[in-house]
Length: 400
Image (cartoon, rainbow, N blue to C red; front, top):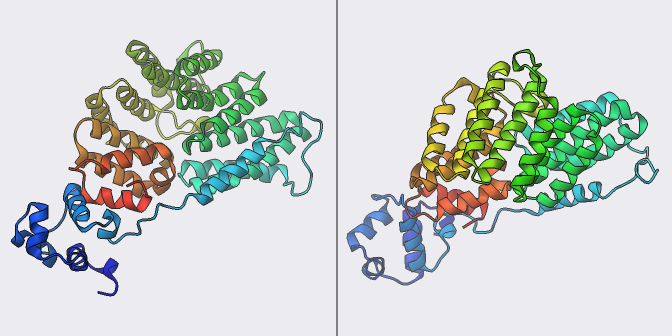
């Protein structure tokens, strides 16, 4: 028994019971179980598949549940993420162009490569590779500032995209104040071009909602949406419809935070009409807008309105479609976290756990690096009826 962490869980129970000098009978009495039950657990005849039972055993043995499961009890390392965020903070603290001091030319990259780098960074984010996305942002921000200083006509759209990406990454990691700064920079760079403003307003709406400013979010995104809304949606270009529809979705989610169910329905129905024209499987302006995205938003809005049953129904209906598989990984994983919360609120911790495990398999960084997802994981893991695999994930992530 030199390496108890390598043993099956039943043998670990026996190991630690011996370390605590407890007989099977005394151990059983303290658990409120029979000696036969303890014997079967230790021999592996009876499995331990309830979180509540694992916690009771760990409490009697005076060990952490993580130790009982053979896992390292230390929280997942966050130093790399924090360091990356600090580098983004430094990049956002520069005002070289405004001060008439364009960034140094050392390390500058050709314009075509910069455009490819911005594209690659967005793809990295949409594949939910957040540590890599975080690492790329500071250099991109320096690059797009140089591009805008050299040629505002060509560099300004890249600058907007760079700051949009920064805002998206920062909001995902729970850095709302920094995300607000990045979104504000994107809006400032976009001023005067309604399409660029609409694109930047997508992230501005996300930031405002994350900051608890739902009314400001709704006002901003709807103003930007109607600036580019086509007179006749049937004649609108897919890009414009995608941007406008995404902003209507953002407006609906903001209305849901305010408890305005009528506005939610009206805005999502209007967005659905545009989505029908665009179709699924597209990603105009990094929106992944289409019918499936609109119906996933219906689930998120229902959850914010307090109707977990409705949220679950929309989730189960929408994720069966082909369009679900065409959405970016980040979009799907974020939705699965919301779905897990909906199942938990609907008193179905088993399904909540399974959906959250699906999210972790699809995009580990979504669950392990996103604070909102870690909160959901901790909530579900505390439920006595949650699957044992969820407590194992919670231990691995460090949220027990």
